[in-house]
Amino acid sequence: MLDAVLVGAGPNGLTAAVELARRGFSVAVFEARDTVGGGARTEELTLPGFRHDPCAAAHPLGVNSPAFRALPLERYGLEWLHPELPMAHPFTDGSAAVLSRSVAETAASFGPRDAGAYRRLVEPFLPKWDTLVRDFMSLPSTALPRDPVTLARFGLAGLPPSTWLTSRFRDERAKTLFAGLVGHVMAPLSGFATGAIGLVFALAAHARGWPVARGGSQSISDALAAYLKDLGGEIHTDYEVKRLDDLPPARAYVFDTSPTALAKIAGFGDHYANYRYGPGVFKVDYALDGPVPWTAKEARTAGTVQIGADSREINTALRAASRENRAPDRPFMITVQPSVVDPTRAPAGKHVFWAYGHVPSGWTGDLTDALERQLERFAPGFRDRVLARATAGPPELAARNANYVGGDIGSGAVSGLQILLRPKLSFSPYGTPHPAVFICSSSTPPGPGVHGMSGHNAAKAVWRRLRQA
Image (cartoon, rainbow, N blue to C red; front, top):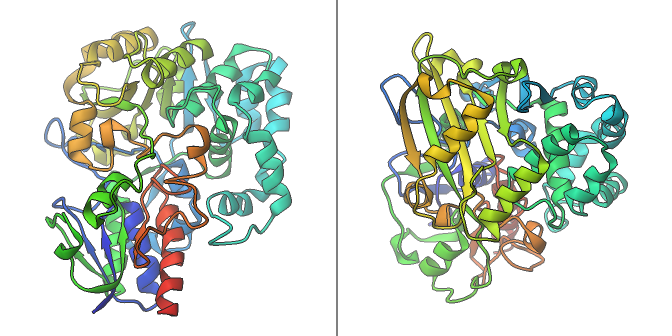
């Protein structure tokens, strides 16, 4: 009998398996797709030689993850590549605000009226970042805070809506960039704890950047899988699990799946009936004949580029998708251009480009034209560079990754109390109604992102159970 069986070979499932295997437990992973990866995959979606990330592409939380940093993933091929700028936010006048590794450079891009306010916001947290990130990505049930005072100060700054936090800024440049940071989790700007979301992304950039993985996000998953195999763990792909009886006998079962899927497989009925999924996204992967022709020079060297003319336009787009059940006329966009720093991703002189906008859950329309009209505002002539495109709306994203219910790449709404309490109110959110069944997906704290911390935290709950049995 195995000690633990894991269902789903995404970053969280693989991290949980590694953590258990490192402690001497026998583990096996079962994945429905033909390769490991989940939200961290790389495929030729458009043309031969153009390697795209169907899901996550830039990894500010991955490079800062306490779980990943504790593992020897570099020995297994993972290499972080840092663009000249982690992120840029261009404006229609050809200028841009930037999120740089340097706090001073970032503050200067906001203008003299807001530079000091930004430095006062982020600088107190940076010297204690490693402790802070470990504390807020864990739970008291898995690890007691190492620095509760700094964590409390962070909570006071971040738990109010982001609009409260950005009220300290006088000009639109800082407010717009910060609004875009919140938009990464598809939450309207007035929501609870949205200030913390924006602050985490900013601090992550200053601490260690927003890198891409050389060769694509698949490199993260492949490194985790290779390490797991060296530890004696087994991985079985092309193995769809529809009920617990499909799995071999084990002392514990750990699911890197949505709560909906887990309830169906394990027969938990309506246990997760109140879990809310968020809006979906419409994503386009591009093969380009050259670099994106950004008007703002800063955007040309940034790994990630946010698209939204100002904070009001961004909030309007977020509200349309999440509260008004319609696709926005001018979508807020997150774009990533991996080939500005990784030439292995496209043939010589060519580029890959990744872009998405928010749409209602399950939306079946085509947002391509609206996305490209937005891009043309900030990069005139963009369409002339397109060699091929691969589009994926909510139905296609959900078919590609079953955890993306309704096209929700966050595997659950990041709004209201569900920002903190997922998948439901519980002292041990990784536990389930069955004492031997656990959940470790992005539907559990600390939530979305390729960082493995949900798997890391869940593994602690599992090995405590195994030691007691």
